[in-house]
Image 1 (tube, rainbow, N blue to C red):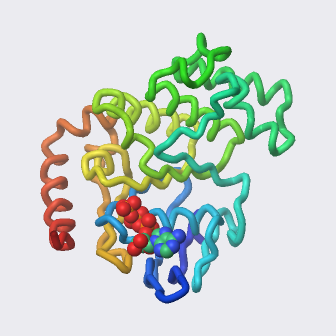
Image 2 (cartoon, rainbow, N blue to C red):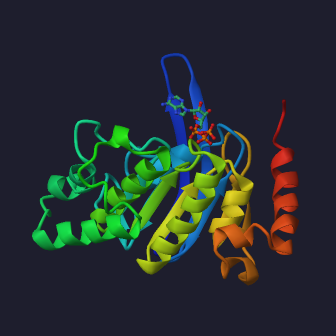
Length: 256
Ligand SMILES: Nc1ncnc2c1ncn2[C@@H]1O[C@H](COP(=O)(O)OP(=O)(O)OP(=O)(O)O)[C@@H](O)[C@H]1O
């Protein structure tokens, strides 16, 4: 059995007078250590699927299994990182990144030391006592990543974590995230609208069709790109070839 299995997931949002089918028979498998991206037109259900995998939404049909556990509620094996950093403005960076440990009752001296070492690896060693408002957007997202990694989840769910950043910061963070997740042998699922980001960071890409979301196609990223850091992968000839292919595929779903 794969590390993560999504089996025949179907989801509908019901309101008083309407029903929106968000996902239709989604099935996918992810192996441990893989970096997977979800690409698709707006509203195709990418965030819904991530929330189902996170155990935040119960699908109308289907199951999600991670590390042999059927996911029915949030679990400490899953870390979630969003577009907004959601750091608490009244807490210092150190307090923010160790908060998850505190919540799950694991803020031991050892875990705190590990988290501070991770802050250092992320180039944030001199800002532990500062507040989020004193940091740049890129630094805050790095702190959010440290907070997500601090509780040692097995899988990270990343919902457009770079989309609010300027282009240069985003490229730097892509490299840092890929390297860090490789070093710590984490599995990752990234939701993004950025085809280049998906190609440069991933091992595989699932492309979704327009609403209701279904998986239209899976792309395996060629070895020559996977071996490179995202910044250099973007400059490889195979990158533009794949970019054009995925662009054409997504273009068919655009109606406006
Ligand atoms: N809480 C909700 N109640 C009702 N409908 C919802 C809710 N959340 C999402 N939807 C609808 O479900 C569909 C899928 O939404 P979702 O946010 O998962 O798509 P997405 O692919 O992540 O979109 P985007 O790329 O624009 O972020 C959309 O039609 C959306 O309007």
